[in-house]
Amino acid sequence: MARGDKTHIAATAWHEAGHALAAMREGRVVIRVEIHPELPGSGVTVFLPFRQRNRFNPMHGAGAAKASWEDTLARKLAEA
Image 1: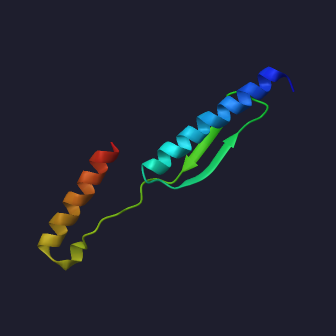
Image 2 (image 1 turned 120 degrees about the horizontal axis):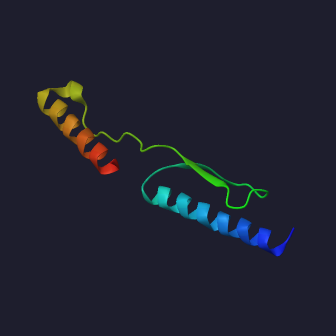
Image 3 (image 1 turned 90 degrees about the horizontal axis):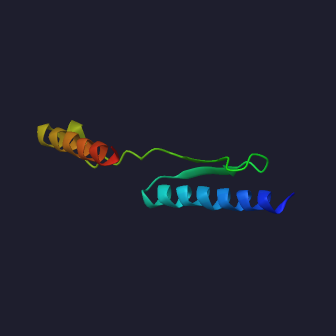
């Protein structure tokens, strides 16, 4: 393996690690990070979407249903 190939592998590994750290910082669960040693610059970071964290049970009445809707809306807007 040539020196340039090793540089691409290391750079790709650092790049994908950055994606993993950013995803974890945002509260996501990283399930896989891969790089392809034969295709320079090819890598992937796979993470789960945001977990549903609605604190309000809409079955507990109209006030809870409204709070649930507002909480869900705020989370979805933050994701966008």
